[in-house]
Image (cartoon, rainbow, N blue to C red; front, top):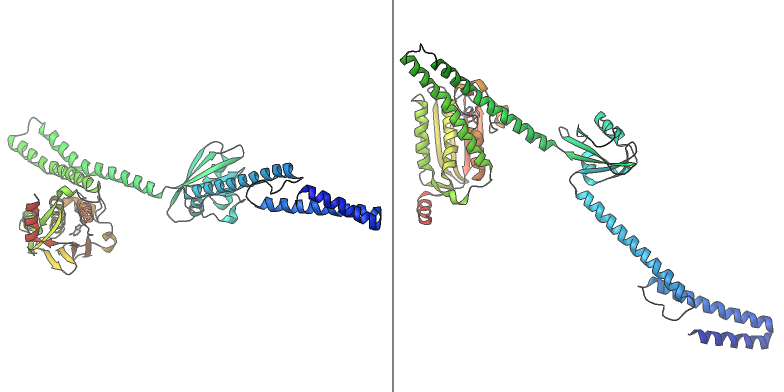
Amino acid sequence: MGRLAWVAIGILASVLVWQQLGFAWGLVAALAVVVAYLSTQLAQLSRWAQRPLKRPEQDSIWRRDALRIGQSLRSARARARRFASVLRQMRRTADSIPDGLVVVRGAGEIEYFNQSARRMLGLLQSDRGKNLFALIRDPDVQALLAGGGEALVEIDSPVTAGARIEMRRVKLQEERDIVIARDVTELNRLLTLRRDFVANISHELRTPLTVILGYLESLTEEKLGKAQRQAAIAKLERPARRMQALAEDLLTLTNLESSPYPDDSKVTGVVVDGVLQAVVEEARNLSGGKHDISLESDATLAVEGVFEEIYSAFHNLVSNAVRYSPNGGHIRVRWMRRAEGAVFEVSDEGVGIAAEHLSRLTERFYRVDFKSARVRGGTGLGLAIVKHVLRRHGSVLQVESTPGEGSRFWFLLPHIEAVKSCSEASEAR
Ligand code: ADP
């Protein structure tokens, strides 16, 4: 109904009632029509306010003001929704950061923290409003919160035994700081590894260098006879070879570590029987006839891999068996077909290895007995090389050993048939 219709109804109703019941009742009737009109207008306005933004259906007395109020209400609601969505997005972003973030106020009152901080520092939702120092009882954290400006400390993880957490405080606003927590356990481990590695290399090089320098000094003595001079020169060979072997093994290891897989262009079908014949020959030379070395090898079994790497793995294991076995010991080298694949095995009757050392044998420069390993020769890198070669060829080194009785090193490799592999390899080339 339009406004004019309402006016007509109002006049008609008030005149009729006035004539029938008197002036006062006529006035009441007019007021009743006005109230009814206003109620329909209000109902229309509230219906419109619930719906998407569009002009009121009919021209109304509230029209202009209602439109303005409605629009500002709607844009305020849209702004609040946008703000809430941005906030949610920021929270999600902060939660996906691997570093822990804690926003603290004043002396350390926790205002906000992300998921990583919760995990790293063991914080709970209920910890908001509590003091960070009271929760992580570490004097370094107190110093961090007390000091002015940017600060950095490293503490034991309050959650994981043995883990280390680095905490950095950065000024956010006048009253607020942000504390950034980072798990530095792995970084510390790598730094220690690097430090140990450098220290080990220096140590390994110092011994042969000292020997070489000693003999070089003696060679400068004028009174030295020809025979003595030649003997001193001959003595230089052993430490020089030791240094050469160390340099070669280090280079091999670096190359192996540079990629988890061998370069495709270097992969061929390797007939292991041929490799083992050569490796055992070398082992017999190293032994000088002091050990009984036997070889059982299935000549039909080949593997796909890098020839030099496979040779080096077999060579290291067989030469270790010789070096760690007393004279007269029997060393058995086997390459055989099994249901699961081809198995290489070298067993000896040597010094053996105590159980607590077994898991660390393939670490670089790890030796069960430093003094005896030096005397027996070797660079301390042999088993590390074997581990990496096997990893690149999809295998893992296994060791069983009993101190004083001997050791068995073995691994499994996926194999191919030797004859096929050779012809395919030569066709490919
Ligand atoms: P190294 O050059 O010192 O022999 P490796 O990496 O080849 O270095 O071996 C690491 C350590 O493992 C050796 O120092 C030795 O203590 C132990 N080991 C390796 N092979 C044998 C074996 N067949 N018998 C006893 N101990 C062994």
